[in-house]
Length: 135
Image 1 (cartoon, rainbow, N blue to C red):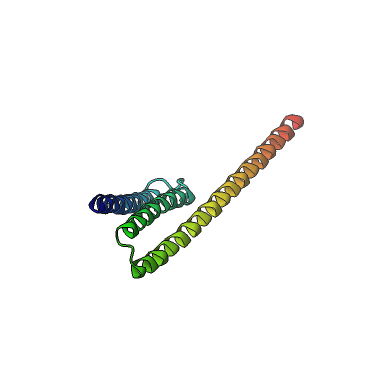
Image 2 (cartoon, rainbow, N blue to C red):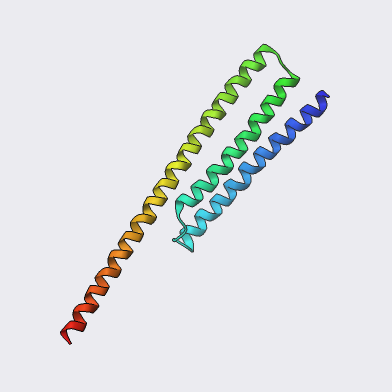
């Protein structure tokens, strides 16, 4: 039974690490692509995706640590586990908070652009109306 729990813990650890590596590489690719090819890709979208996957990876790593505490429940290990879980939980909290702030910034930017676009359309219409009335 212990070897099964250890195996599952290792699988969780590898999944968490794989998620981190894959999404760091993908975020780096998107940043370079944005920089070189398409400047219209919002930086916030990249940050949000990366943040979501980092939180997911941290959750897998916390699950691995909890499984390890089942196999090795010494006081010293439980104290270390508590510290590790606390740090990862705080990281997850602040990542989620950052993601929410970026989403709000992106929403405000979109609303601002929509407002500017609407004002531009109105100015164009007024300009066209003045030209029509002069004729």
